[in-house]
Image 1 (tube, rainbow, N blue to C red):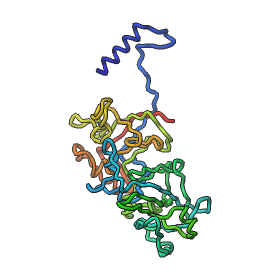
Image 2: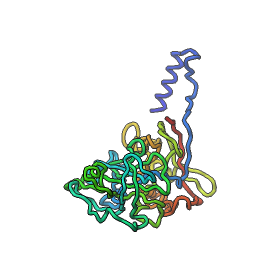
Image 3: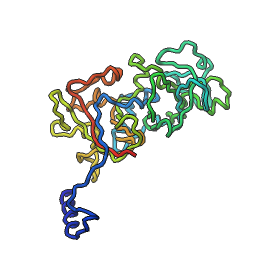
Image 4: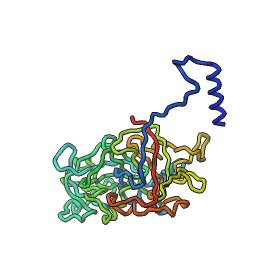
Length: 338
């Protein structure tokens, strides 16, 4: 049907005619978009969950996949983040700064209650789980994006090993709102000299910091390092085999569909062989990142048809120590920079 419509349009243009300086009905449209290509080890390091409940893949929760793996997305209202402040460690005093103690296992509190003073003093913080020092309040939209349904932060510039990230946030809760950490306005009104925050990223994050490592996301891929916004994204996924050949299908099924990027067609539900450019679900335009709907797309959550190519090391090894296996996946396509 699509072919018939295209042929009809070309024939109509041909017979109606137009001047050569206006159009050429027989010319092939040019694609001026920029190409990109990356392998499956090159995940973005700019995305972090604020708490391990959002990284929980058990059947009772699986908040991330419930949202990104369904049409329409399913939101777990109990864990919907209503308000958040994001802080990054600083070395010098500046505007909107606080001195804080941050804990990765920080318990929640009621909005009307306060944390005990014992949490405001920590002379010997546990590496990977506790941090103390100066923090500066970041600006949403300028420094980061936040995804309240799935509880993760996307930083708009690269983080450094020494950077510490901590947050204060409020969620719906089962019966009452629950608060983690202390908001900037509370500190001013209560005149607390030391804040209590929820730790997200400790300095020098490594795999031995198991709780913090779980919060680092490894299922989101940036088109080009340091690229700003991009639009008109199209992509495909290929398996590159040890003999040098590439294929974008297995058992007559496209990898794009197997990985959840081709679920829609112009008529509704069902694959059509084209990347579903679904803003905020398959692709984040502001950060130019592709979002897999599962947390370990090439590991524990790899499609069943591809289990022989599973590569768990992506998720339990520091990125700088990873080496490409004999068979690996690549993502390539085109985009328009803004």
